[in-house]
Length: 408
Image (cartoon, rainbow, N blue to C red; front, top):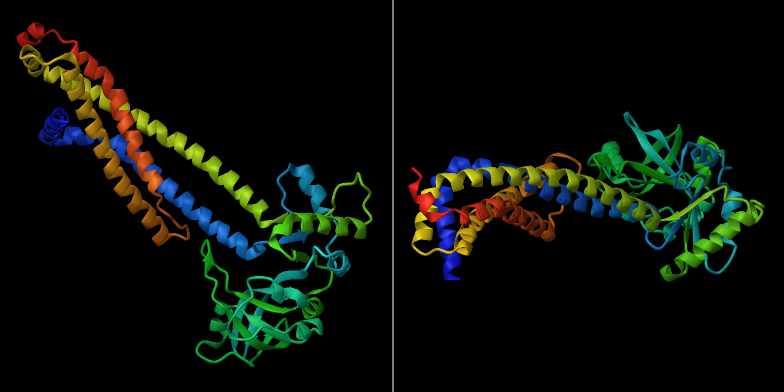
């Protein structure tokens, strides 16, 4: 332990005596570790961010049936899925009454339209038409007023639940409850304002209006395809319920056993798996690129340490003449190269944290600093210092003390 502290103090003294050279030695490590910390922080932040968004959109413990589903194949498969027939109210009724593993089914259709009150107009509001069972699904909570009742939705009453931003833009400081607004030229009565949901990649999730599906189809046409969200009686029965929903759709559409589904069906886990595959691939590529920076930084450390060994030939010769063994010389040189490398890792970690926080502050992308990424970054720089310092250390240890003392 004493030998370690002695070697460390000598290493720090050498680094401090040659500050500019030491900085240039570890610059590659600083950049590489900063990149690792920043990339990991952003990807981990995105994982949580996208996961929450998927759960809000699809819902936990539910599954979605729509016209095309998730398209991951080639262009021919994409075109075939686009030719799928529309999801209709007949499909809704078929799934609703099929079996005990289907507790609730919500039909939904969306479009964009202007919403107006007096002289104020909000453009491109997301209009969501929903069926009467929509309250059985998450994502519909009010900050003010109430939700449209199932009876109002079933009878296509002109009532509307506004998103937080839409209500704020239309009414400012006024109370929107029981006020009349226009959607597509038709008057609707505001019965509630939804809780604030925030934004997703800079896009507001609160710029919407929820109206009864029947009223939606009167305004925007009934030929739009619906999306069905299905809820099992218990989240543990999700897969069994999904299989039952698929059978109901195939029977309704009179598909033969060997015919493929002409509809899409997926859960939030399906979307999460796709995102994880993408993020893991992106992380692997970025980590590979960053590793090249570490290799370049290691080569720089090795070259400069060889120069340092040449400069300190007489010092090494004197130490060996006074009884220092080969392993003592190797230990000293490795301690210096590893210390330099780790210092670069620590500085790079701090800069990586700063870069991740700046990205989070000035862009829609979130960041989440992970402790394991700190250990990874500093651990990799320590290994780089050891590996690329080994050759200079061995060369220094093999110097002949007599020849070394003759050097000027």
